[in-house]
Image 1: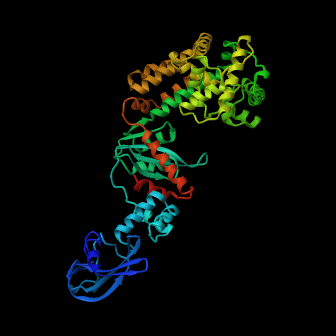
Image 2: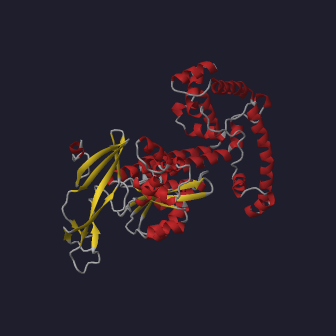
Amino acid sequence: MASWFSRRDFLPAGLKADQVELDGNTIRVHAHSSDAAAACPRCGTISRHVHSRYRRRPADLPAHGRAVELVLLVRRFRCQTLRCSARIFAERFPSEVTQPHMRRTSRLQGLVRHLGLALGGRPAQALARRLLLPVSKDTFLRSVRDMADEDTAIPRVIGIDDWAWRKGQRYGTLICDLERRQVIDLLPDREPATVEAWLRARPGIQIVARDRNGGYGAAVSRALPEAIQVADRWHLLENASAAFLAAVQRSMPAIRKAIGAKTLDPKLLTAAERLQYEGYHRRQQTNQIVRKMADEGLAIKRIVRSTGLSRKLVRQILRGEREDVFRIRESSLTPWLPRLEQEWSGGCLNGAELWRRLRADGFRGSLRVVSEWATRQRRAEQAVPNGTGKSPPARRIAALLTMGRDHLSRADAVQVARIEAALPALATARALTDRFTDMVRNARGDALAAWLDEAEASMIAPFACGLRSDCAAVAAALREPWSNGQTEGQINRLKTLKRQMYGRANIDLLRARLVAAS
């Protein structure tokens, strides 16, 4: 049995087995170094003069369902150099065996570190107990912290974005190397001064991909004035859609007149819609008060103090963004609405049959959700000819206006035609939004300047003015291959790690798990 355990594939290189014992559920292997001499750790002199011996008992990887314990015979040598301060020293084992003062072998310590990186503290401890590894949760976390490698590579292209310690209250900053696809660092906040100090310490950075957060842009400009800033393309498209939706919301009174739904019959509303309609009337009273105060020349700050409303709400009222009667929320049916409207236009008007067809294609919602949609659709169609129905919400109208004409049903196409005929400015804003989307997707940076000139005179002028103030980064987004999507993916991984540790990890542990596992 001793000869079998002394094979190289069992013991780490550099050891010889003397004896193997089986003590209950533990395999105890007595071993010693195969070298006859040792080097002094102070002066490096080779010595063969043994002074004394002692034993170390590092834990090793389990074998055959049993825990393994190494009993290493350690020799103390006399240093032969007279001026050396280390008169007596203990021999050092190879790094593949164990490190000085460590209670585990290097290969077991490597497994402990990887379990800590993958699972954290308590989950790793629970798994280790089943793997016969006597390691506590604190040891797992300590090994992650202690063995986190300091990244010495100098990044050239980075992505930077914020992440939430606690949403709406406290934020940090994640920095990613876009070329190596690795997280470089985590910063405890998103203050421009913190980001600026981090960037100043790394002057080799040439390209910075970011969203249109003004704080990050100013920090990069001050710390690295020669670096190229690249706006995130996904955020550009999302901001363009939001700008067009705001234009539709401001135009809702004119849109309702254009499609012939000037009034609403409460009998046609569901209970939830009736509550929203009553809330709309209450909002209209508040809107009239705020607009009247603005017409009298009061500043937004004075209106906020007088009414007790938030600054954001006052701005929305003055911009006409609170004119939508029905505000819809995302539901399990939202991704299936185009399919439902297609089936409805094709003549399938039964809620149960619609549900069965969606179910066959993977829909997981209930029959009640589809039946209620069919009921509302049927009531709306009955009411529209008499001019007493309700208009679609602003989000739905914005989707219809930006959707390809080949994908619209006949009723939707008629509505879109009426809206564009009555509001040519909104049709122009829709065309500008389509052109901007085409520019971003096809990297047509040469058309940006002309587009900005046209958009600044349209209903999406606030969005165009924002792009004008960050024109260099926007133009780089249409020219450079880099974007911040990779950084967003790393933030999703960070959120997973935070939830895995129940949100109790501090910045150094998060950094160690995220950077070391990249």
